[in-house]
Image 1 (cartoon, one colour):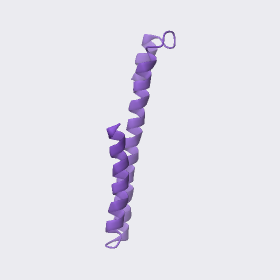
Image 2 (tube, rainbow, N blue to C red):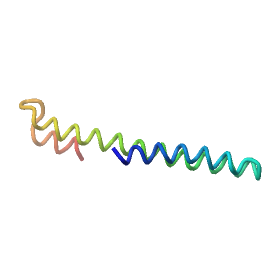
Image 3 (cartoon, rainbow, N blue to C red):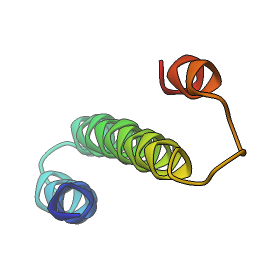
Length: 76
């Protein structure tokens, strides 16, 4: 879960970058904010998919829920 905390920290740093750059150039500050937040959202989505994949692996321990072939297909 350290990865999730890192993506949250990047979101906070994006706002800090905006606050620092805004007096210099507002458009540049907005661009930096949107690019950093975009990266943060993409990273958070990848963490969510990893968690979903781990849950599918845990579901394999439940008997009768999925066949082995269905689980392999879902994980891929």
